[in-house]
Length: 190
Image 1 (cartoon, rainbow, N blue to C red):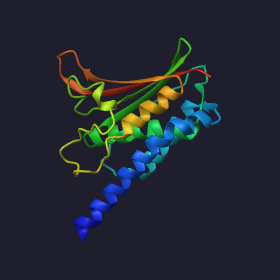
Image 2: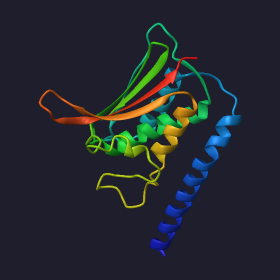
Image 3: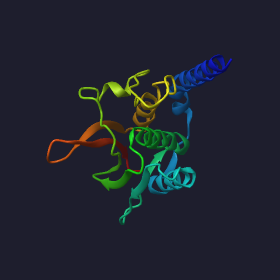
Image 4: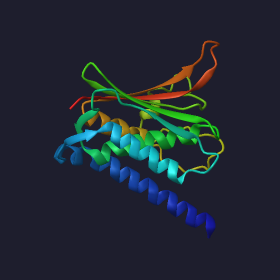
């Protein structure tokens, strides 16, 4: 019974994610955009995660600010979904008590948000594939079927519907050691 219950839960989540991905284009074409303060959104997401995190969970650090307000025109709930997904992925790939840095800035008419972790990096040659539907390459410590492989695909769809782009890369230090992964979201300033 426990195995059946677990499989039903996994299938329910998968169907919900597929449904969400299918509705997204239609929803985004009808949604009314409004100014969204990216710095305030990230601060809220970081505070929520930190308030519920275990003591050995990776720490989240937000670097943002400056003189410009980090405003984009968009659908706040969907943009929050993107950053929440990136934070959740960074947490799942990061070792205990490591640090995840969210850095938000403005340059050349764009809001740029980097989410850097201290995990295993992106498998070589998979920097684009990870955004494909149903692609998943999870840490060995995670239970099979815990993820649908749709989170990054949906995130890309949301970012692109806002006129932006999302990329991923492996971070490498001066000695050619992998030090983590970086996801970069670029959104046009509002």
